Image (cartoon, rainbow, N blue to C red; front, side, top):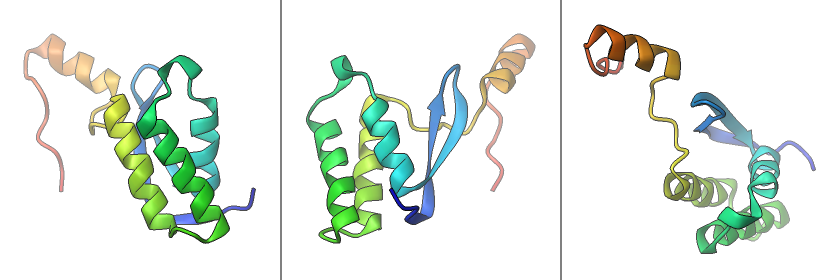
Length: 102
């Protein structure tokens, strides 16, 4: 698959909650194809179909990105902005979540 770069990456939490940026249409498709079969559903199918349609020119990359972002939100893997090491440090210190930097 060729590398069709997205204008804005989709940040997801992987593994133990570490950030991964999905930056291309190929990365979206590869991630979806590796998604566990038991966790696939309608929103998964919509995201996968959107990627396929963007590859053929029937949807824009941005439309496919939005479908993928909706999938990550529904799957609970959208990046929250805090890595697990920082979260553990804050919990241990009793300070809660940091204020996001803008």
